[in-house]
Length: 282
Ligand SMILES: [Cu+2]
Image (cartoon, rainbow, N blue to C red; front, side, top):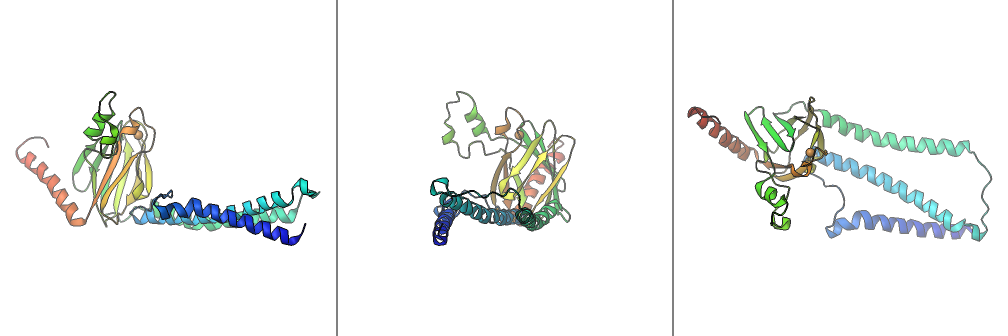
């Protein structure tokens, strides 16, 4: 086998691998058909995205290297070209190399991963706390510092449209199955701690833009936190199969700037104060 041939085939395979990777990972982003995970709107989601990209590119480089060697070998050292297989069965040197290199790669990836994980678990210094309880098939939100609580269920329009023979085309409903009657309203720029639990079966509270999901387990309280950077409406769903209406318990988070959030809190508590003064239940 001529050495130049090996180099030419290896370069051709390498170019094909890089082109395929570019088409799969980079090109979709340029055409707006991104297949990557979203960057989210919190510092946590940004660090998870960066971590994901670091690991992805490490895997891509390894994949390109491995497939280049593999396809080059398949093409150049095939039986029809008269290639003779090597006769050795063990190589201590090769075994040491293919053990040490992956270990080093794994250790290098574990450092940023562990840092992100430790940060994710650290809800200290939170400025407000919200208790989230999953029910079949709705969410209850309790603002422990503001004395506000409400149940958030699938919005009426989606709920009507989803009924058998409703006569309402799901396509005609805005945010079909992704809207709720009472969204969770949160302030931006504030560290918010969540206490997540469930009342009946296991649910999972998941809003992709926040960068994490947490199981809601009866009898357990799971902690999580967020600090939203960008005001907006963020949607999510229950992410743990929890029964027949699992697909009908969406989550909507509305992130408001600090002053608008305070106004919302005042509005909620004013209604409560008024009904207390009138001697009626809130
Ligand atoms: Cu569920």
